[in-house]
Image 1 (cartoon, rainbow, N blue to C red):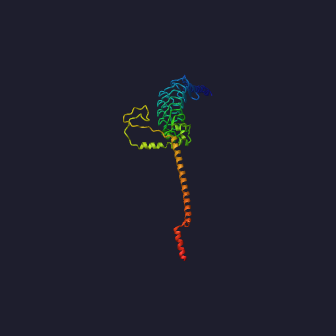
Image 2: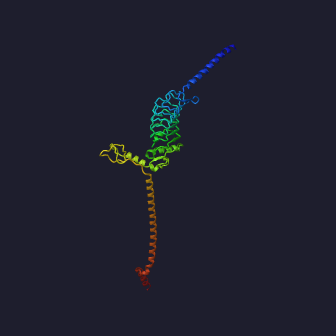
Image 3: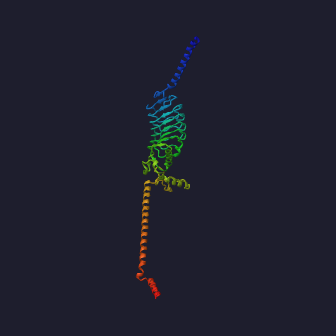
Length: 356
């Protein structure tokens, strides 16, 4: 009993020291919060939004899981802005002035599952920007100035299931760029100046396949040509793009020619240099007018219908005429002996002579 009583204070002291040490370690881990941000120790969230920041605070806790930097004045980000934040799961950079992102910016965020870049000034993306984010599930690139999506950008995103490209400057998309997104469930494409021509044909096939396997698309509304303006590309019959195959066949079968200096005459862009004296009058391809094509089909149908009706009427008239002529000849034959038919008189004389 005495020995136990002697050891009790020591054990209690050791337990108190251990608890104190753990609390100090935890405090040390969660304590360093940037002065311009607020930190939530329970959810490991650092909120630096709406603070007028022009750069990312350098003293963000290493165990941060959610980092909010929206509604600031960020215009550029160094490649090491998020170094050592390997525990980060959610990053929100919306409503800033970012126009270009370094390819190595997200290289150390291997556990990132959500990335929001909504409402910035991003005009282009490096194809390697997302290559080290295998766990990314949600990506928001809406309300930017993107005019194209580089091929290979989504090659290493096997878990991405939500993607927004709304309100950019996209006119066409390449099907090959989106085929690696095997887990994609929803994509937003609205409010872009889509040109529904041959450049969008293959992506239309991808959309049909995506919808067939249960994917959701908000809309892809055509801006050009004017005959299709306002229509959803998914509802445009594929027959209207049949001329694309003919163009591809013509281009593939055309013999190789020596380079020809560009021309500005005809339908060429005025920004190109002036043509030389031997420059041919080249013309750019113009999409077929759907309205004219429909009018041609209607006119051809009317003409064919009129011709068919005329043929039926002519056949009926011929049958009636033949019937009347046959009836006339029968009646004529009946009347010929009464009108002094010489053959009939000779037959009558032979009958009289045989009786005598």
